[in-house]
Each structure stands twice: as C-alpha cells, then as structure tokens.
Image (cartoon, rainbow, N blue to C red; front, side, top):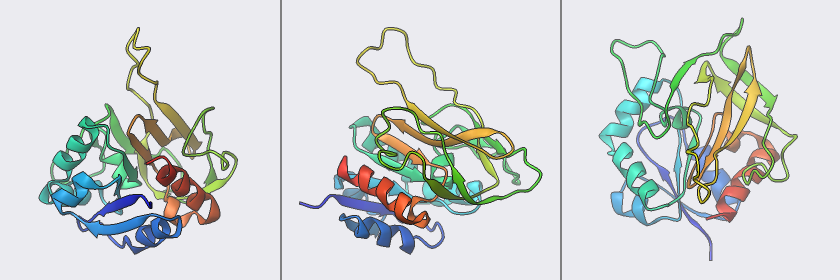
Length: 213
C-alpha cells in the first residue's frame, strides 16, 4: 500500500513540483490544509518558499504550528523543506517590520549567510553523518539550494542518560561558513535545500523518506 503524504497547503509559492516528485517516488499525495487529512496521513511535507515572515503568517492562518506539533507529539513523521525547515527554529533575523517567531520545535535563530554573494543559489555537496536515513545512497551527491538565511549552528543538546532517545543527525554544508543543511530528529526531519528540485539525488532522498513512513 502506498504511503499517504499531505503537502501542507498554506500559500507558500509553487508547490506542484513537490507534489509531482512525491508522486514520482510512489506516494499518494494530497495538497491540503484540512486538519483531518493532515492528522491522518502517513507523512506531512511542509514546503517553504521566499520570506520567513510570510511563511509564518501563512502557517498561522492555516493553523500549521498546532497541526505540526500535534503530529510530532504522536510520533508522526514531518518533513520541512527550505523555509519549511527554517520555521521549525525559534525565529529568524530576516528583516521585517516586526519580529516574527518560528514554531520553536528546535532552539536557535536563522541568520543571514556570511558570504560575499547571496543568495546561495545552485548545486552544492553536503556532509551527511553515518547512519543517515535520508541520505542513504546519495551521501556524496549534490543538491539544489536557493536561500540567503540558514541555521548556522545546531543548539539542541542531547540529555545525559537518554539512551532510548537517538541523538539528532545533523547534515552540514559550506557557503561562506558551515550551516545546517538537514536534520533528522525522530519523526521530524528537514532539509535546507529543495529535494524536489535536486534531480535523481533529491528523488532518492524523498524515496528514502517515503519508504520510512
């Protein structure tokens, strides 16, 4: 039976490429913000294109933070992509008329890349840790990035003695500095790059995620 994936529809740019890519790797996909479908699906894909603050405004209007939190509380898989990854942190320093907080699933702020040229746009390799599920078979491949901001540090500590809890797996990339390119943290995973725009390597990463649902 095919995994059922919902692409969260909250007004974040053109998400048809994500829908097509997820269908290509064998999942049944629906683009919706219907709370019942979001809760019932095997995997929730959270897209994000453009401005952090606009994405948070759209997410709040669709009750996205609560829907994501409820899924994670039940151990139900969520995959955030690009700004859909950034919103999972405490907030962003991206300029805006007012401070915009993130969902806060992970501590830390999203900051501007300290590079001579931004955005970071194009293909880049990543450093995936041993045991990564997402990057199985594509550890040395390149992925497509387009962003000016990123989580430059990983700040979530691992509690002492928490033997039953697997430490988060952090994948990094370099552009001006090292930044967090992907996270695998129990049911919550995210990539700063766009797997749906990353050719065969991106499709394999999505296939790995869908296969884990």
